[in-house]
Image (cartoon, rainbow, N blue to C red; front, side, top):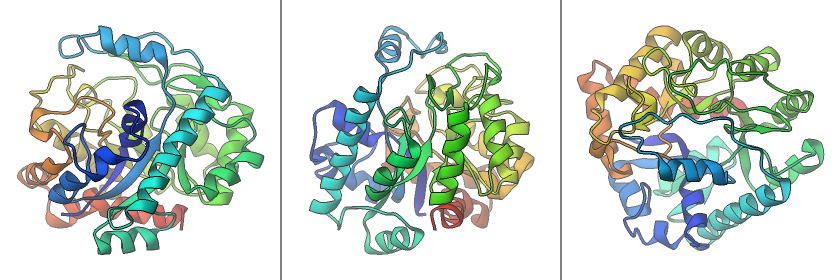
Length: 349
């Protein structure tokens, strides 16, 4: 089964380790969750590849918390500066552009669904560039065209911290996603510009007010690229049933995350999590919002995953769990790639 995945943090991992040519991915060094050899073994055929600027206090909290026994909860994360975010994100974009130029047989930056389909047919991993938290710009009308020319086709206006466009949802468990104000005036303008340009809007790290604000002005599908179901795991990052229906009403989807702390009922990052937990989230989305709203958004290389799904080579085991959980072949195909390709065709073209 081909898999088109809604979110991974491979580029951040490569940048953080100083791998400016993507050697770890291309030579399949076995580190992290995603590399070329394991992608081919597991059917990982493409996805949204995030560029992301780190928050030091968040990294420090992760390093000091045993999330396998205590669910991650922390206060609001401080904003980050434009200069830092711009430098980091452009460096990550440069990494993937070098990879694509050096090995188009292995990975290709795709700016349309036609290019995605061609890459998949040729056996190359299809990369759609996604910016996670738009701290790297301050004037969308002037600066978004540059990102577009570099291949960016998907944007999450906020990560889990405030910026000039809105207020990201903080990491809290248990907690309702209604944690504060939503989009700013600049945020509303950003959504309008993205839709005009054919850039997909992602609400994965938005709070309840932000999701509602996007829905109030959306004229094309929007998505939550990597999140879970709040009714199963009451983490602030997960979506309520009303939000699931709101996203589906736009024609969009929710990519169910594989991070165990967002799919377990107790909110813990436990590697012994059974993959049936993921299937529970998929089935809930289908029951509440319809099969067209259910997809995969792994967050590979961005968070803790189950031992039974240690990297992307193990994706066939996830497919088998969906079969065992009662999903039929057409539903599994929709979750694994069909719904993502439909939404991308309707948004980026």
